[in-house]
Structure formats: structure tokens, C-alpha cells
Length: 162
Ligand SMILES: CC(=O)SCCNC(=O)CCNC(=O)[C@H](O)C(C)(C)COP(=O)(O)OP(=O)(O)OC[C@H]1O[C@@H](n2cnc3c(N)ncnc32)[C@H](O)[C@@H]1OP(=O)(O)O
Image (cartoon, rainbow, N blue to C red; front, side):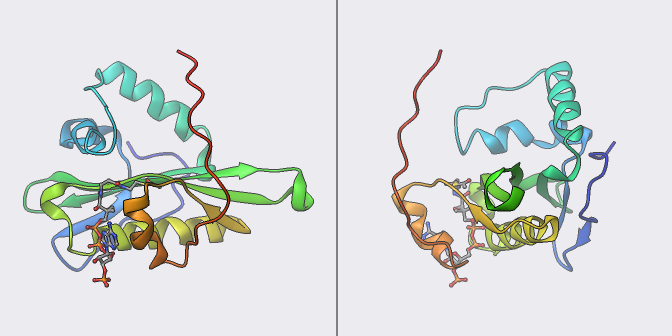
């Protein structure tokens, strides 16, 4: 099953990878292992994954997770998400938040990160967002600078609640 209302059609990449919206079957294709390369992400039970998938799917096109599936291995090689925030300011403007972009260590340097970021930004544009923002480490500034993101303001550290 695919995310309902998934606004971006699966894209035959013309090569070894297909970029498409997250599907329920992706839990068994290494989704959690991929996310673990970004941040601690212990394996999820099928129930937990399905429940979160349904919550996000209920947001429709305001939340899109894209993955890149490798044809040869039928495993995920990359993932990234964009969340559309609905504001009151700017005449009820929309802001895209780029989140959890990760390419499997073995697949880096092949342009997957670029393709994901471009697709996610285009999705935000298509939803009518007036800007896209993200948080990243200093080491990633050069990567995002390629897509015209600029360092701006200060990110405050997490206020840990648990
Ligand atoms: C908002 C967030 O999610 S921030 C979290 C970002 N993700 C991570 O930190 C997870 C670990 N890192 C990764 O998963 C990957 O290294 C990524 C996503 C940053 C890059 O993915 P890749 O598939 O390797 O990038 P890709 O091959 O598309 O590279 C595109 C261009 O960016 C450049 N690039 C890649 N990483 C970096 C970097 N850290 N700094 C500067 N430039 C970079 C490449 O050289 C390439 O340049 P070119 O077009 O001139 O040849």
C-alpha cells in the first residue's frame, strides 16, 4: 500500500534506482536501517510502523516521504521527507520543512541525495510553499548550499522533554 494521496508518481530513474513515495512494504526493505545512519533508530515492529504510516498518510500531501529503491537488491538506498507547515502569517502562508534526508553509506556520491532534495523541494513548491527550511550540521552546509539553501539565524538546541 502506498501513502494515500501520494502526490508524486513513482519515477523510473533510468538507472539502478527508483524514487517513489514510502510504502508499507518498505519496513522489510531496510527503512529503519537506513534511518539509523541518520539518528538512533531502533527496529520498529510492523504494528508501530503501520500505525505511524497511517498517521502520516492522513496528512495527505502535506507530508511526503520519498525513498530510493535499488532495483538489483530491492532494498532502500535513500530516504527523505518534506512536511508542509500551515501558518497564519504571510496570509496563511505555507512553509516546507525538509527532514531526515539520508543516503545509504554504500550508495553515496551517486547523485541520490541531490535527486531526493530536488524532488522534495519541488513537492513543496507544488503545494504552494513560499520557502523551504531545514536544520543540519556544519558538515552538511556545503551539500545544501548546492541547492541554494543559505545559513540563516540560529538553531536552538533541543529542549529534551523525556
Ligand atoms: C535536513 C536533513 O535531513 S540534514 C541530514 C543530512 N543527512 C545526513 O547527514 C546523513 C548522512 N549523509 C548522507 O546521507 C549523504 O552524505 C547526503 C544525503 C548528505 C548526500 O547524499 P549523496 O547521495 O552522497 O549526495 P550526492 O551524490 O547527490 O551529491 C550531490 C552533490 O553534493 C556534494 N556533497 C555531498 N555531500 C556533501 C557534503 N557533506 N558537503 C558538501 N558537498 C557534498 C557532492 O559532491 C555532489 O556535488 P557535485 O554535484 O558537485 O558532484
